[in-house]
Length: 398
Image 1 (cartoon, rainbow, N blue to C red):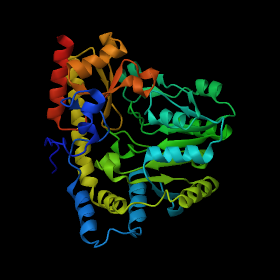
Image 2 (image 1 turned 90 degrees about the horizontal axis):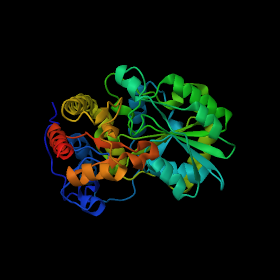
Image 3 (image 1 turned 60 degrees about the vertical axis):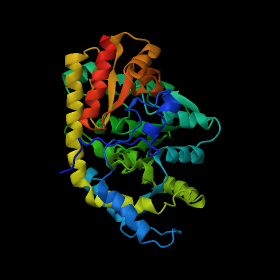
C-alpha cells in the first residue's frame, strides 16, 4: 500500500508549481493547484533507478540506450492500450510541446495553418503562433448538461460542420488532445474515425498528445488515435510519456510514434540530423523503472484520485452549488464550471487567487471558450483539497 494522504513540502525544491507563486501570482503563500504535476512523492523505485545510474557511472559521459528501454515501452503500450507499436515507429523526443514545435518547424511552410479545438491546452495554439503560423479555431461543442445526466455521453463534442467550413488548403496540422486537457474527455472510436477520414481527405497531419493516456478514470478507456482505422495510422504523429502518470515530468522522458513510413522517414531523419532524439542518461532508466514496476502504484493512485474527485463534486454540491466540477473521464485536472457565480473573468480570478488564496489556471488561458471556468489540479492529498474548498467556500460566502 502506498500513502497518497501524506502531505509533502515542495517549497524550496525548485518546484515551478510552488517556487514561482510569488513571481507569477504575486503571493508566495498561495495553495498551488495549477501546474500539471502531482503533489504525491514520485515512486521510490523511479528515484532509486536514477540514483543507481549515478552510482554505477564513475563518469557522467555520453551514454547509449539500455537494451530493455524500448521493449519495455512497447510492452506497456500493448498491454494497456492494445496497440502493437513496431520498434521502428518510435523514438525519444525531449518533451511533448517541444515535439509539437518540431513537427511545426519540419512540416509547415510559410502561410500554412494549424487547427486547434478549444478550450484546449494553451501551448497547442501558443506554439504555432510563436512560430509565426496562423491558428484556426475549431471550438468544441459543450455537452455538459447531457453528460451530467448520462455519464456515457461525452462532456464535449467535436464540431465537424465547423471544421469543414474552416479547413482550407492552407491547413496542414490539427492538434488533438487525447485524453483532452483541460476538459478530461476520453474520445470515442467513432469520433476518431470521422476525424481520421476528414484528415486524410484534407491532407492534414493529426498531432495527438496522449500524455494523459494512462490516467483514464471510472471505467473509461483511452483509445490511441492511430489505432482506430487505416486513415488514422496514415495521418498521425502521436506523442506520449510516463511523466504525468508517474509524476516524473522533470525527467523529460517522452516519445513519438509515427506509423506512416513516409511521414516517419521525413520526421525521424530530420530529428536524427539535429540530435533531437538523443535521450539524456536518466530518461531510459526512469522510464524502465516506472513501466516495469509501477502498475501497483498506478492502480492505487487512480483509486485515490477518483476519491478526490468524488469528494470535490460532493463538497461543491453541498456547499458551493454555484461551482460545478465536471467529472473528468481521465486525468487529475478538473474543469470547474463557475459561470453561475455571475463573475467577470477578472473578478473570478480575484475570487480564487486574492480572496481564497488558491493558485489555479483560469479557463480563459485555454481559449475564449474557457471563460467562466477554472482548471483545478486534484493530484494531491485530500487534506489539500479540503483546505482549498474551505478557503473557496469562505471567499464565495464572504
